[in-house]
Amino acid sequence: MQTKSHEMTSDGPFLIGVDNIQEMLPTILADSIVLDNRFIIKGINQNVLDSLGYTRAELQERDLNCLVDDKSLVASLQKDLSIGFSGEKRYVLLTKENAKIVACISGFYMGLISDINNKIVLVVRKTQPTVPNENPENTKVEIDKFIYRAAHDLRGPLATIKGLIDLIKIRENNDELDRLIQLVDSHANVLDERLFQLGYMAQYYKEEKNTNDEIIFHALETRLRKIIEKNAFVDFLEFNFSSPKGTLSAVREDIISELLDNLLLHTLSMPIKTIPSKINFKLSRSEKQLRITVVTVGLKLTDEILVATRNPSFSYTDLVQYPQMVHFYAAKKLANRLNTTIESVFIAEDRQRLEVRIPI
Picture 1 (cartoon, rainbow, N blue to C red):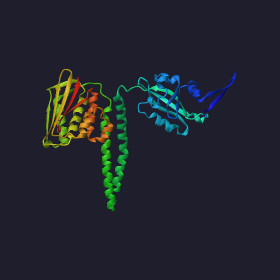
Picture 2: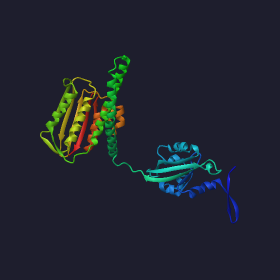
Picture 3: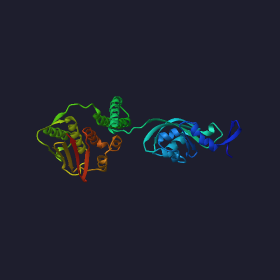
Picture 4: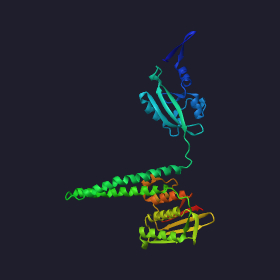
């Protein structure tokens, strides 16, 4: 049986049906959408239509999820309205032109305030539109700053934990406890190393110098060979370096040097497949660019390395899965600061070429 509502006029009372009320609500309630209990749009206020760029006919009888890209709006509102009403909550809605706007939505079941059931009223208040991030690297810089600070902040408590472990170690009995202490100590060292890596990755947000420097090519070779002496068995590795003679002026020598360091450290972290393995660095220059080419031979390209080096959006979350790629990630960040990228070319199972073209 359809519920009716009464109104008085000079001609006497007349009856208004639920359907009439449903049609009138969006006009009476500014910025509103009327839904049935299946979240099908039954009425929509003109203000909301103007914000979304639709006509009333284009949205009438459509599922409310048509206004979002992930189809989660209905499920979220069902949960929020489980007690009959919902306070304001922010959602990202899609316009007809597929642009995104941020809207605060509240709502209630009509049954709370009348004898009309199975109808929902949403109040949609538009806030500031979301603007596409024109430079995603700016966001990454802010993340870097947070991680850099977090790594240093956590080192203090970690040092305290390690100091307490040292005190516990002086116990004169309980061999099992001593074994547990060794495990805790081992895991603390792993955590310490991870924090070091986080700080190391994020350090490149630091303020850039505004001056350009000069590259001395033979000094770069000396620098790289020192890294090899500290990080590899030189008897098992053949390292070749070629570059133009002399110097190159008006370039960021500090960033380019760090870039070369991290490319080398990345290659040194790769598993050895054949002995001796080879790492070839070649620097060449033209009028408009400095070209860095790194070729590895005899170093195994694992699936993890291939996935990470080929992924243009390789980020912090990927490092959780591929922690051995820390130096490659640092090199990518440095390349970005030089307005370039790292190109990875798979040649064979044990052979890869990395190439960076730096504008000068």
